[in-house]
Image 1 (cartoon, rainbow, N blue to C red):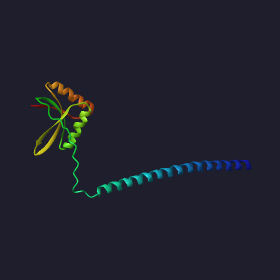
Image 2: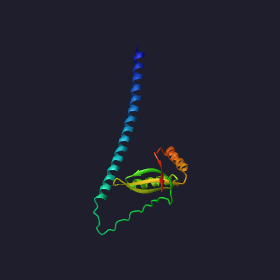
Image 3: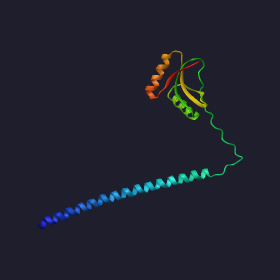
Image 4: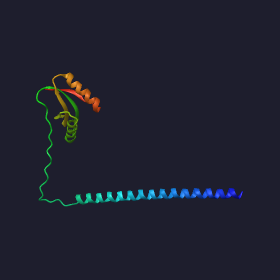
Length: 156
């Protein structure tokens, strides 16, 4: 019977030592994570302070304002034909953004402006096709590749 008790005590000690090793590892890992998060929080706080410092700097009245970068906006191709309209935006900046995206995708987009009910819209369009079937083919490609609801229009 004494042997059973000794074995039980030894088994309990082994389990306790094993658990304490795991507990120590978990505690060290948690401390490391917390220290890393604290460092991240300190970095974020420093970034906010830098930004606030920039915002609060006084404006030099004699300073020459930086020139805005001129953005090239392709205009409507000459002549009449079918075109694909991919968007109509109230924001010129967003229309310019779409022009950049479709240019990067390999298309030749352009923008037109139209006023409807007193509101100015910027239309982003692609192509100038003589055959409606060519325009419909491009429309299908754009809808398939980019899941957009484009439509065919006729430019006079």
